[in-house]
Amino acid sequence: MLATRNSHKLREFNRLLAPAGIVVEPLPEEVQLPPEDGAGFEDNALPKARTAAAATRRAAIADDSGIEAEALAGRPGVRSARYAGDDASDEENLAKLLREAPAGSGLRYVCALAYVDPATGEERVFWGISRGRIAGRARGTGGFGYDPAFLPGGDFGERTMAELTDREKDAISHRGAAVSELLRWLGDEVDDAAAG
Image (cartoon, rainbow, N blue to C red):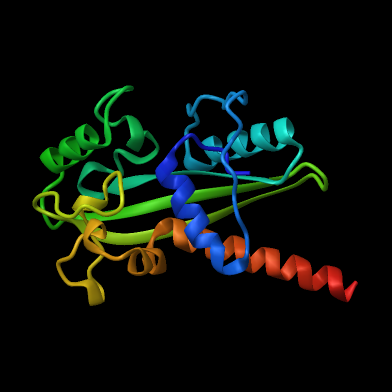
């Protein structure tokens, strides 16, 4: 169970987990998620996963993620989805970041991915970070959120995250890194159970 109402995240997590044979389902409409008012990414991810797990009695994952600009002392950070206001669109948030952070300055995407299993009481948080810099203007139609302004560099040159293929993005994204940590841990759990 994926504790989100964001259709982009649902697609991305299903794509990231598909190679392991894991399919995540959307949260039932009647389940009310807690507000994202925590001081950090983990503080928002864990309550969402706990809520989904308790309501559905199934293992649940939830992420909280955002972008941190070096030139803005880490803003927008945990407020990334609300950077231009509580009801701001992705485009409005992106436009504000492009106005405030100088082109070429450092950025990092951060993801805290919480896992809660109500059957075992297990709770874990897995982290993923992707480093880059900000583009001078938004480019590309892939991805979502701040992807059109995020330049990962390296082999990708001057292409933004929104100009990469899904496969390229998944290999370097903050969510991809957090999911890799989750899958590594789940694999270790399966191996331990088989050995025990």
